Length: 214
Image (cartoon, rainbow, N blue to C red; front, top):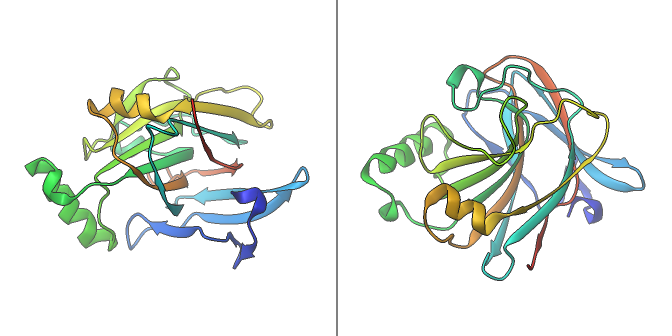
């Protein structure tokens, strides 16, 4: 949890930088004090990268997740189904266990390409909760390059952008809606703010992310 984390080179302890592509500029993340606790402040300027932390969570036992986030600046023309507009000021990201051999043949090619471009193997499945102002909350968007990356619209407000917004989601049920199967174990939790495709500058703040029982 960010609130209890020690600062290690400006980042929360136990969290690692996740680079999307080797040549893309990195989003800046820093653990900062706010309101008597620590939160993560992200600033993206034509950049894309995330922070993640390894976990091992059985969603049958802990199906819910909650967090709070604040998005002072939106991306007005964001559209994560279109490559030129596929950015979000805030994302909470869950990846899931699984092997390359379990993927459909066309997704095996994406897996190999992602590993070559980033140095990181593509997770078996990725479920993101994103802030996008032009779609209704709850809508699921499929990544334009991979059916193994699904995005749930979890924030779309254009109001009260200077305020914290609390969010609670059912990751178990959202995974089933997105992928049509029961979820394997969660292998990592992450955050990401990106603006590499739209070329704008955005920022976001992230509070603790917790798994909960029903």
